[in-house]
Image (cartoon, rainbow, N blue to C red; front, side, top):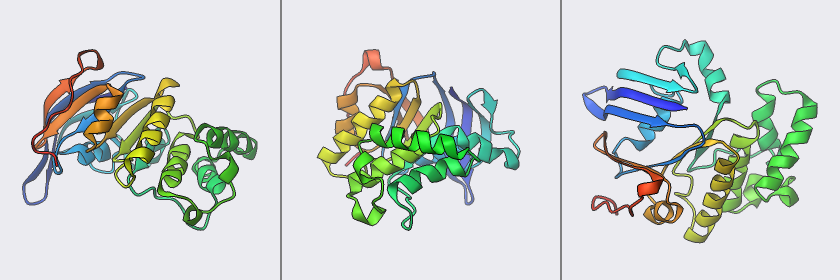
Length: 233
């Protein structure tokens, strides 16, 4: 589903973000990206979304080599990859339902499908009763649930999350992780960057650890060992 082959990223000024990263993520896997700040986690996710271009190497997403993909095709790539961020990125002037529906409308989805799928996904994330609320009327955890609903409403085969619990308290974070786990169990491949070792240890899924742009650990779920990174706070 996701393949990185000898991927490197060097920014202007010679700052190296990723060094020859090799990784294969199978369909339906849940993979955590862990490592200290500056290790390359967010850069890796941005490159899989073609928000950043590789300096060297190749990335395949759902069988497509996105390193050779022309710019006009990138929006179509992103329609097949749901994204969730730390800061929610909700539209403040739209209701919960309108925020979720927006993700379908920008793809030209028929109104009948929008009317059918938005209530379904709001029920999945537990926000059916708050469909008419605005983001300012929601808690942080509820806003993140809207963000996840928006990312999942068109049933993408891949969902990428960059520190989705970073602004949330521990109890709320548990609820968000249960939701992502539920989505993963529908068959969606999930790749999530996080600093939260408690979440990683509780979930017991595959862990890819980065340090200074290199993969220093790739632990499968079956051979899981708790994360113990002395560089992490």
